[in-house]
Image 1: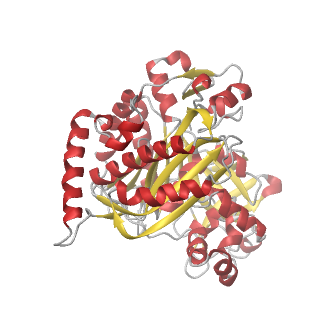
Image 2 (image 1 turned 45 degrees about the horizontal axis):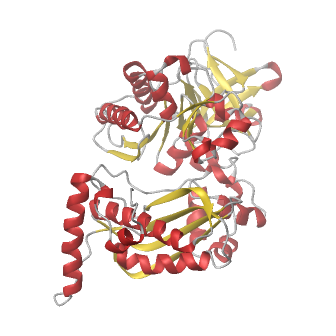
Length: 396
Length: 112
């Protein structure tokens, strides 16, 4: 293969829609979305490329999607089926390399480094994977190939749908150079706006930017931004079971009806945080930073984060700061559409108390028992007493 | 370029097509490319970056676009050019002036 590293980014095309089309081929060629009904303020979870041609996008309110595309076909979705289809795809991918990192239900990185003795060409190998997934599971995938994860992910986005893009070895920066700022993972709307304000419009311009300019604007992240715009990324592909150190996890909830009721928002946030913390403990991770997001009825969003002195997986330890942030974000009593919480700064481990920290030991036992019940009967089976008392119709 | 492989300008379908013309153009490979270490196949679409200087190791597109004649060559360590995939051997005297861009990647679609 003649590459120091050979990383494939595999992305299933419009996954939920594709699965629905396998179940019902009559949907092929139609503008289809999977998502909740507009009456229940549902959002688009996945959109077919025919629907995207009308401007329909993931996470868009369903009502807006239907206005953009009046003959849109909406399907509520079959979550269990997506999990089974995903499992089948990943089982097939694992037959090609043992080093595979699943990053979501429809996305993975495969490391083919050092496997040149097995395969003549990474492109031919990727082609074979695409054809096998298509023939055996009737699903389309797009593959990006390069020396690192970052560029492979951009390459797969570039090749969508049903494509494969192989970036020439050592030409990563040149591939990225003409692309718009938002093409690079990690550059969201806020960073893009800041870069545009500085006069940058393409990744090539950021790659060649004066380091001092980026340092002033983004602090230490400026240097990282420049490196990434140059297509430099040494992040390894971690096989399943090796948790990523720098990822995050979280939950959000769109309300059936917009609300200004702070006590209701606090209860929902508490519930979301309990869910996120439960996932932390299941994955044996600790979080150091909690971020709260509030989306107002006019779709503008506010977020604020707080970093704890010590990483934890106890929601009670995160809750105090989360509630403080929520109150700060809603001090002007806005009409709120959505509230969310995200935990980041993740490290492997479990919360340990000191030898004399009886409270921490009790907490660990309590969470352990509650989590065992949740594992057996579902998350909704256990709630905190205060929450149950304040919400008799607790039916999560 | 005669018999063998040939390259012609295309606008690819899908997301890549959105970048056509923005310092990047695309060439579809057709005919019968000769198998070599590059592994090119008919149907491959090459993404070519314009306005960049060719460096050692680059795969370059050279030729005369007005005639629709394009060919591929690899820049070697001593700055000579080696033909690839069965394209005609370039003449060291003229290739520098006729370089149209540097290949940054190869696109394949499932139906190609």
